[in-house]
Amino acid sequence: MKKPTRTNLVLGASTVALALMLTATMGSTSVLPVAAAQPAAAAAQPAETQFNAMDQRKQMIVLLEQMNRRLTTIEAKLNSGLSVKVTEMPEVKIKESSTKK
Image (cartoon, rainbow, N blue to C red; front, side, top):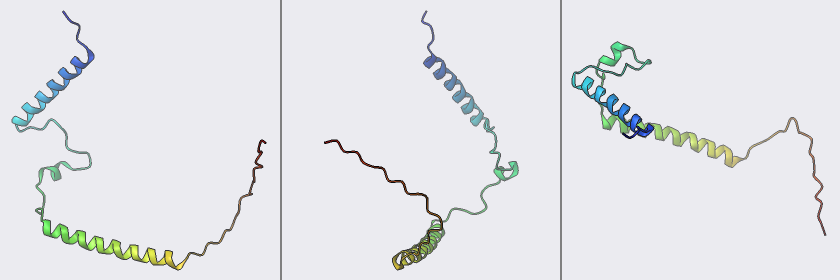
């Protein structure tokens, strides 16, 4: 008889895990726990508002307009020039280049 390889063992274990998850889903019980960030009561409640594509697009347009205004102010500052004042300057070291002739 052939000796089972590591791949066969991993595939068998994943098949068993998937079968357990399928049977738990069919029985309407959850194998996976509720996320730690969500309270159990909040996970059981349906979403308060339904998905509304039009409202989502309006919000995206408002955010894009805000981003455009901010980018415009940044561009104006960059185009007007920046004033830079150096308070500390590290020592400059110049390497002597040795050329072979």
